[in-house]
Length: 85
Image (cartoon, rainbow, N blue to C red):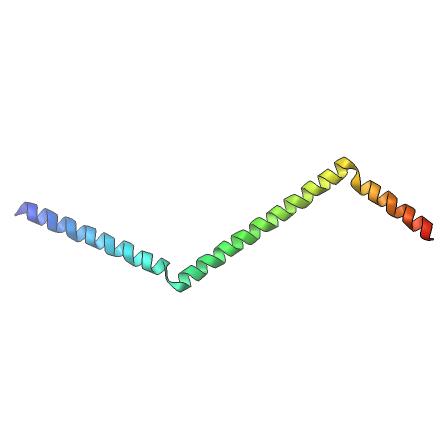
């Protein structure tokens, strides 16, 4: 009798737990929930691309300074301006 009561209570507990998990899964797969998750992912991607763009521009500036590309471009533009005036 006690063994049957033990297995019955174990079955009820596992059934309740499974129902809870299934309900939570169903809520997560509803269209509203998926749309909300997609918005969050889109925001993260946007922030990541902004961070990459900032780092890319900073690195490009470092490389231009190291190679002296900005000063050469300025010198060439100055020469062109002098020739046209």
